[in-house]
Image 1 (spheres, rainbow, N blue to C red):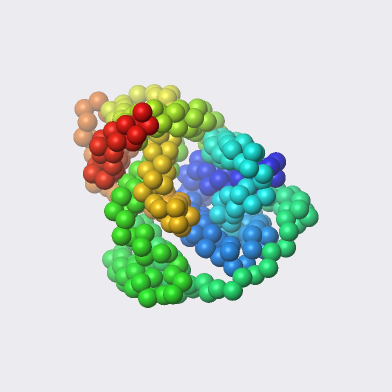
Image 2: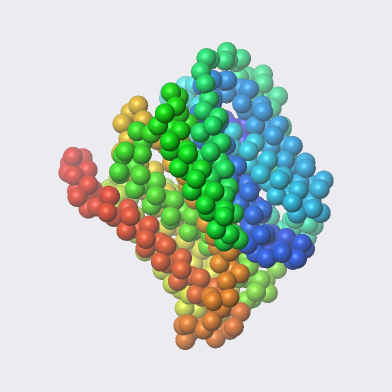
Length: 449
């Protein structure tokens, strides 16, 4: 469990550790935020696709071989980024390779617990891993800010290399598993991956050619999974309206919050001229570490009051946070720090509700593939949110005085951007409410009584 927890920590840690360094990277290479954000976006794309790939092929090739190849890939990406950090294109490639390797961990770690941890300890195992994931999300920006400010952001590539320390243990303990017969839907996975990449490029540079290619790939993917004997994603999942609504609402909400978080370092630099180390430790850290508490509370609230009520609380917390920043973006940096607690608290509630609602919408034989697709969609949505937010930061039409409470010209962009985020949050809430209204919660609570 110690080694599994280390793996869980570093797989998510690397998703957030570069957040506060994005303005420094943009300045070093002389690029726009929309381009700099691809340092995170490239990781999230391969991480999302890889999570689905590893889960799909684990039954064919065994978990031990996949874990070994994943960690070695993770190491290769980290080493490449460290050595060639002066070339931005290589940095993006290194982050993409990192994500491809790190994605083996969330896809396989649940399999390890299910297969090798005795039933009486599985609850503790999942709880320990969940806590490590939450802790890594919280400490990532703080560690990244300190290293970037006092040394250099390129040294952030060294930290994931410590995952190699777990290899001797897993090679010794995990049994060799025979490969099973079966075919992997390479064409379906390729069409989906290319479609995602083209859409992400469109959200950054707004070239319609990328969108056209993306639509064609997605259409081809849908045709492929309908005809393939062993499709990459089971088409029956797309006929479940509540499942689709849960995935869509979760994607919109998680992607919006991820986009907002990626804009915070830029806002603190532009409006308050705050150093990178302070952004990570004083602004982002209090909010991200609060997920430990709110994650526990959200589970209790779902059991006692139902999903609809818990989702409403989470949405109100996020909207209150965004609205406060929109109204008073130029007043004090510590307002941002306080509102981050509300944002991450609401996010914890949303994550718990979406996972619970989607799981209840699936039959027992669909739960594995359905929940894997949910994880894939949420990781992907976060990448899209970061990419889209980076594009919005370059939009001149957002840089105008709209609210009378904001007077600093540097804050106009961020104040107006918060209103865009609020609109997206409301949209995600409407999608969820249409599919999962009060009636469902009433029936669930009634059955419990």
